[in-house]
Length: 243
Image (cartoon, rainbow, N blue to C red; front, side):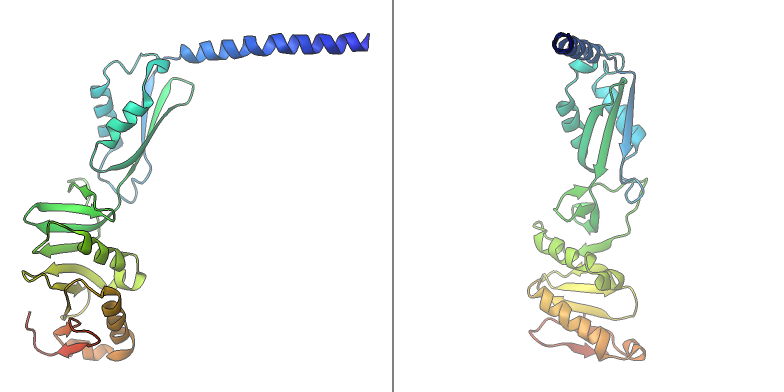
């Protein structure tokens, strides 16, 4: 008898699960989109976009979204649409199963604000151009002067400054002269730092750090107007400014 009961249980389970799976699948197919929730994950550190603006753009692009069947929606297409915004780095679209469509976005993180002949804009560390927003101003290093069309060297220098806590606290601006010499403008002090061409940057910054930390006394900084790192293995401090 117990053997028969055991066989009967297996038969019931084998019949029950396919029916339930079919029911769940059918229920999922009939879920109606009732809401669109947009979450900007890094809104506290960057404010280039607002959740309400993204939501409005999505509803304009997909006018039949609300009230439509979730199963008929192309989430990949929707992610590509949101990613087309200059400030957006990555987007994930998913349905919670309740009819609410969730759109989670992350923004590009700027490391540099550029003022040049192309106008003013931000750059992230991958060279992506981000528009200036009236809603948000990022506290990043400023680059101005003769900004080159190819910005790889400028971005490399900015990354070295931003990702090093010492230099991030010290520097506020990069200026590029017509001859492509780079100048650093520190946050504190009246001196300028001539890097010269953007080569051997690690060595130049290392020499400068030694000067900052072990070279001059704090009171001596006010005596100098220019620090020249342009020449190999030389740090020249001048009381007169030639720049």
